[in-house]
Image 1: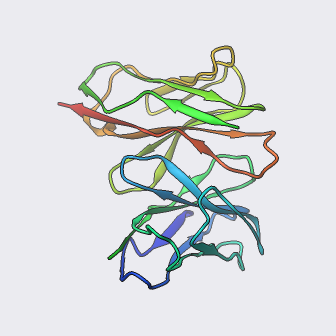
Image 2: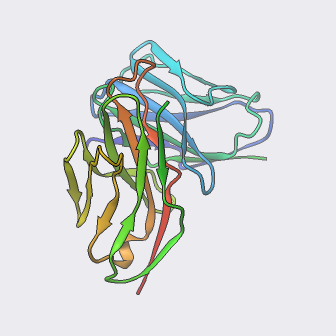
Length: 112
Length: 115
């Protein structure tokens, strides 16, 4: 089955620790994206990548970092510089830049 | 810049009622329009899409028509079910956007259907 996997589903960390969220897709999509969703709110774009070894900042990139070493993988690191990291994080991919995006199941990160 | 405005929620309906969720947009180019649905604790699923003016997207009894003259893409369903309870997001992507690929989302509308 083709799809997008995010792991883990729930993640707990202490304040001051970096944490990496995994996103893998086997859809052979070129573009991948990371979004943040806070309760009762829409989605905000953190980073996106249109090709391997290239990525661009979205609207709220501060305190986050990404890499795109393989087409199928786009991990997101939430650093200790992110002031309010507790949120639901969604990864998405699309076959081309302006096509519809397909989403993974999300990772809920709680930092205390 | 691009923006999407959805009707404020939450929306509460009885089973078999008619559903309309309003969505209007502002875009500089020629956007494609989407409706996504999010069930509790899950990611977003693409519900339907339309890529040019007057296109009608449809799926699972839901429909939306791309109206360029009113810059709207309202979601409708003739008879909702309890299983339709979810959050619905309207979104657009602009084919002429030069700053890179992104979806612009509305704030989402929570729908609750009671038996």
